[in-house]
Every structure is written in structure tokens, then in C-alpha cells.
Amino acid sequence: MQKEQEPQHELLQQSCRIALAAFLHDLGKFAERARIDVDKETLEINKQLYCPHRKKYTDDKGWFSHVHAAYTALAMDLVEQKFPDLIGDDVAPFASWKSRDTDDSFINAAARHHRPETLLQWIIATADRVASGFDREEFERYNEAEEGTATKKNHYTARQLPLFEQVRLNENRQQEYQYRYPLRPLSPESIFPVQARDCESDDKNKAQREYLSLWEQFNSALEKIPVSHRSNWELWLDHFETLWGVFTQAIPAATAFNIRPDVSLYDHSRVTAALATALWCYHRQRGEMDAAALTSLQEQGASWRKINFCSFRVTSLASRSSFSPVAVKPTKGPPNYCAVGHSMCRC
Image 1 (tube, rainbow, N blue to C red):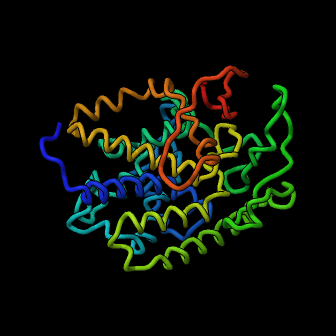
Image 2: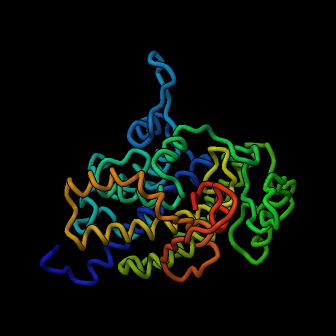
């Protein structure tokens, strides 16, 4: 245990930085689907830093999966000037100088969630896995999975399924879903699902243009957060959480593993941020920030499934006024579905 407590405002600032890094761990999904303009050589370098490398055969050169992680780092370079200071002398718990080579930089903590090495990186990676409802074995399968959703679309063309259309009085879940949420900012109009034919197609170029338009609106909105509020982390993060919700509430968080794309990037990011902050505060308060804590966290992956965090859908229905991960109690029901219908849970 730590003998002396840090001033409350310093702990609050550090917690906010952890939360923001976790919020942004999948920023690359947004940016990559928008096909932001990036230098090919720089992209390849970032793939080597942040993406898992896969091989089918021993003589195969292999390929990098989960390219969105590389885009997270690239996109961070484009938006970080609109954030509170993340490269100054006091950006604890992250490294205090601007260097992508620094293991515990803010960017590395956010972007290395598929290749975590340090404790901070593992905290965010663990939060990501728990928020996704995966245990360690399932997460590895997801890492290796090809793109493709249960609706037979890819990560560009898939649009988010509404939850209520999936509610059934019997156990027959093999229906064909007719509605989707349009890829638009949150508004009184966009909260209502529309016929799939009106917002979802196989035209990848059209789908990418829709993402690019949303990305540009997101960046414009970031600039409207008052500059004076950047010195107040709690206030600025509150602005950002609202803004992130407006522009990512209709972006499917997962588009591989033949999964149903019914969880938004906002809900997944928000739960990941809540869990990462809680996990960091737990280790910080206990003074467990050393190699032993890292090893312990790495070994806990298989046991996370015992805590039924179906936080995707619970959070989407719960109050959005504060970070509050919710544990779902086991209930009786169809196998492989949790109390709120998540197909990846083991309630």
C-alpha cells in the first residue's frame, strides 16, 4: 500500500488521462473506415509497432491483422493538438516526453491493445477484452478472424443493428434483420432505425465516403470544445464523452468473427474507459505497478469470463451520466446468450 496519498486533483487528472486513452483505443476503426489520407510508408511502420503479425505457413511472409490499431496511432497525431496537453512535463501516468519509442506514451497505451507489453498497455487491453465479453481464448480467435459480420457485410459496409428487432418471445434467433441505424451523428432523426436497403449496401466506396463525412464532422466538433477548458481535465473529458457519443453511436464496434454488429463504438469505448480507469486506480491504490503486477494481469485473462460483464448492452440502456460498468448476474436462458442477449457471453 502507498504510504502517502497523492493530492486528489492529481489523481483525478491521471484517471482522466487513462480514461481518454481507453476511450480512443479504437479511434483507428473510425479513421480507417473513413480512409483518412496517410503515408503508406508511415502506415507500414505503424503496423509493425501496433498490429499482430499472422502466418499460415512457416515459409509465408505473413500479414498484419487489426490494422485499425495502426490507424489509432496515426489518427492520434491528427487530433491530439485539440486535446489537453499530452506531451508536456506532467502527463502522468504516461511518459512525459514526445516519443513514439517511449513504451508508456499515451499513444502506445491506446494503440497497443492488440500487442500489449507494459502494465499501462495491459490495463487498457484487459479492459477492452472484458468489455468485449471475450475470455482469452476467444480473444485470440477474434484476433485471427477475417472481417465479416453476421449480416454478410464488411467493416466498411456494415451498419449497426437495432437491439429491439432482436427481441423474441421464443428461442428462434435465426431471423433476417430488416432494420439498421443510419451512419449519422446523433439527432432526433437518427435515433430511429430505417430499412436496411435505405442505409446499407455492398458499395464500399460509398460506405467509405459516409465514414469520411462523419470523421470530418467529428474533427470540426472537436475544435469547438473551448480551448480554455483544456486546463480542466474533468470538464474537458465530459465535453469529449458527449461529442464521442454523438459521432460514434451508430458505428459498429465489432465487424469480424461473424458477430452481429449491434454494439456501437461509443458503448464499447465508454465501458472500456470505465473498466480501464477502475483497474488502474485499483493497482495504483495498492501500490502494485511493478513487474509482478504486470505478470499477474497477463495471467488473469482466462478468469475474466467468470465475471459476466455484458457491459455493451447494459451501458446502452443505462444512464450515461457517469462511468459505471455493470456486471450481469447469470440467468437461465438459451446457451451462449446472456441475460441481455449478447451472443459472446457465457452467462
